[in-house]
Image 1 (spheres, protein in one colour):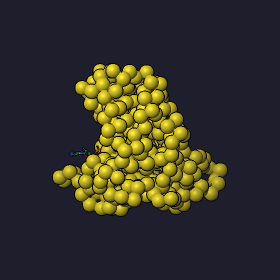
Image 2 (image 1 turned 135 degrees about the vertical axis):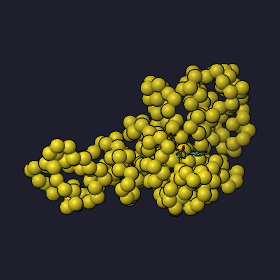
Image 3 (image 1 turned 180 degrees about the vertical axis):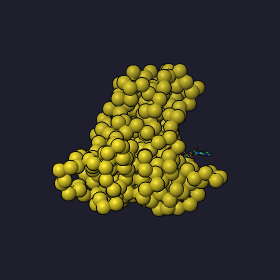
Image 4 (image 1 turned 90 degrees about the horizontal axis):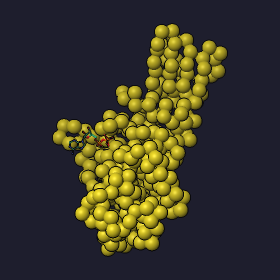
Amino acid sequence: MKPVLTTRGLTRRYGRRTALSDCTITVPSGKVVGLVGPNGAGKSTLLRIAAGALPPTAGEIEVLGGRPGSGPGQLAKVAFVAQDTPVYAGLTVGDHLRFGAKTNPRWDDAMARERLKSLGLKLDQRAGRLSGGQRAQLALTMAVAKRPELLILDEPVAALDPLARREFMQGLMAHIAEHEGSVILSSHVVSDLERVCDHLIVLVDSRVRADGEVEDLLAGHHRLTGPRRDTADLPGDVIAESHVGRQSTVILRGPAPEPDPAYEVEKLSLEDLVLAYMSSDARPALEMA
Ligand SMILES: Nc1ncnc2c1ncn2[C@@H]1O[C@H](COP(=O)(O)OP(=O)(O)OP(=O)(O)O)[C@@H](O)[C@H]1O
């Protein structure tokens, strides 16, 4: 199957500031992809370029085999929910549905109505009076009712309380289970992504630091803890290291190090893995097929 997203050397600058730098990734189709990184890493920039909402400064990008935003056919295949979960404050929920039906060739009105009903959203409510969580749900409903091949969500749960976060992610998972398609969603909170994603991209300081299937990433990293040591002779790439007192802790990419009774070798949680990359912004990018 064709990849859902491929980029080569994708770069976006704002004046002298580089928001996205030399990004080269391939995202397979049919996956739920998490895009994670700290504030200002370039996540929104990458997603907005993929959605056709922002032109790149340099490099190439293909989304579902086409150029982002290149025409009605391309726009119909991709649904994008921007970070501020945009809704039309003066319109009612029902107006949103009518607007969606008019502007989207594959609009699934029955699904949209059913979804909103199950969330307790009334058709005569004004969008401007909805809570942050309800607005996020309305924006997600508008996006999924387009029946897109690719759903792009930029920090969809950022404004939600923990319960609303969980409900939102459960709703998203239910949608993914029922409908085919690919999803790319960003967050700076790994725990939001952990349960839903099968592919992860870590972006730090405008650069892709890690990119691969979650399983492969977890299998390919280890934490080594033991007496203070030089890391130059360790196998694989050193992603992060700390040396406190007489103890060294090293995060390694590659096969598990040879057993040594003096050192403990552990697998990482996804959160630890992401944190290791976040604390290592001078190191080379990682790709795991
Ligand atoms: N319109 C703009 N003009 C100038 N600089 C911008 C603009 N938009 C983004 N940037 C800069 O580009 C960099 C990347 O921003 P971006 O919004 O893509 O990061 P992000 O990872 O989505 O951050 P966050 O998690 O805080 O939403 C930041 O340094 C930001 O200040």
